[in-house]
Length: 155
Length: 151
Image (cartoon, rainbow over all chains, first blue to last red):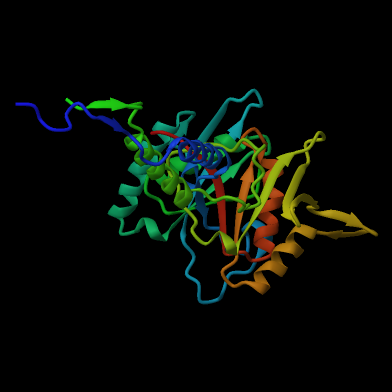
């Protein structure tokens, strides 16, 4: 049995999509090249210490209870090598080790009833320490779950 | 089977995908909006960090070392980067135009925030006067701009 119209030529006479595809592709490439995306960068929030001896010499409010200071001294030999020192126990050039040591200190402080929120980590760098190194130390303090980190005057 | 003429490639799935991508880029991309960040400055990479949603309340300070090793701070003003002095000596008096600028911004906007976009190779001696100016101007929020690194 022959189906009627089976041999008929079907003209695919829908709308011509070629100009649409051209324009859409141009828009896509434009957006990909020109657009700035917020996901590529982020920010480390600093809490500037407010103490009379602190950076800038701004007087602290009278009602303010000062935080427990935790100083991290960072020195550089000038050829890119650096060393971070916390108290007399920790002296390292490895950010992972620094994080572990700071984490241990946090636990010790917690044992004495001091919460990390009431500890102000103060990074005290040498004049020639690179910013890249300071940010790595800063991140190590944040990784050790100390929320308040700031920079002090250079030594 | 019916005979097809002008069969060609089926472009419908292509258009579907491309349209989805266009809508995505239109929603995500910020076009024609400048945060004042100098893209020539190489910032450090960090895994940690948070986003700032209200960039309208911020001032980005682009910090690098000049040829003499002194801090060079630039801010975006009227579409171009302008240098702002840090601790200058004028007529025998020490002035700090950066601290004055920050103080003025803070007076105008109580939610004022500073974003520091500094060169990763720069020594701390170039960053210190900028932090000092922020403290002198009593800026409550200072944020260090970094690039997202993969953990």
